[in-house]
Image (cartoon, rainbow, N blue to C red; front, top):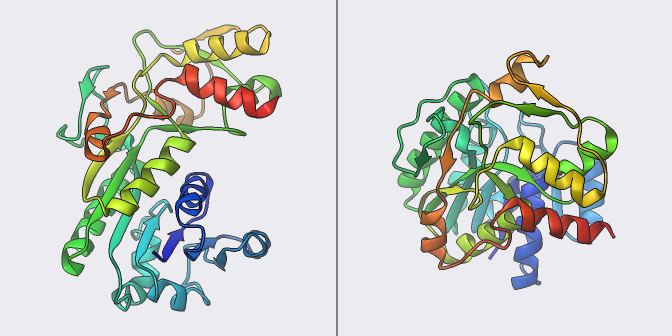
Length: 289
């Protein structure tokens, strides 16, 4: 297995860690946006290349052409997915390619008024970011079909984990307890993204799957629970209708749905490591103590 990650960020790093535990001698190459991060990852044993998505990466071609498994974790731009825009020829030249994976988002579904949905739900995205994800998903399906290789599309819910959780926002004073009656969100712990990506890579899984937790919950409930775990008072409740928010912040509340994860669990024969925010927050608190 020779794995290449386009975008070695929070989720990809977790996947790389899981792959390394299973295949400690298998080479892993990746892209990052800065030479400083490339140097740090190179010191950790990765073959790291600078690629910011606006122009071809100058050094990544040989590693990409040698790869067997490729994971795409870069947000698409107006012109499409950066990897396809700038490095399709290198992918075409990867003679040993066995599997592709694309990290998408549950935002592609749009709003379902809090109802449960699965992967058969229609896609009615409500902003440009999610529109681009829908187009990128299809572009990768078309490419995988052309190459005759399996493709796993993982539609990720709200990602959290050590260093990126409600705890951090509570402690730095940026947490806001916005209350919109009936609003729920799914979440997914980054360790579950990493583990499931690694398992899907080993199985060369094919298909589109939600990757979300078992219990979608109101955001204010998570904040109160985390504050109790820290022994601090939660921030005051704010009514969504009157709370000041940027258009970006407000856009997240436009979608209200409960995303089923039954398909990915059945496909891999697993349960999540952190099925709800309670287990996930407990793990994060343990790593901090």
